[in-house]
Length: 88
Image 1 (cartoon, rainbow, N blue to C red):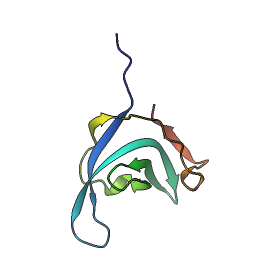
Image 2 (image 1 turned 135 degrees about the vertical axis):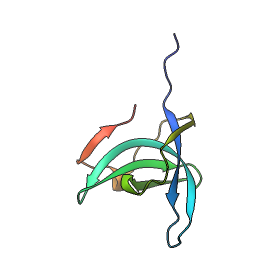
Image 3 (image 1 turned 90 degrees about the vertical axis):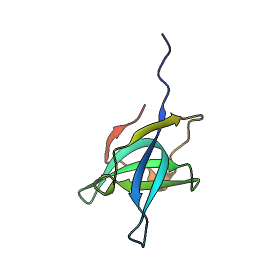
């Protein structure tokens, strides 16, 4: 039996500064709590940058979109002690 590989996810998220929405393809790494809000910490494949996505702002359910090809190291600015969970 093959071992499941870590998955990228795709979801709809509000477009910053507009009333629009954008589709995001993200490598999820962990969920953290900041000021009472849960955030997904992940690498945004389209923008080629680390991002935090407020879970209560998702406009669609995350769907599996592919397989993570290489493991990334979370930058210190996105690393946190208030981790709720890790993605494996």
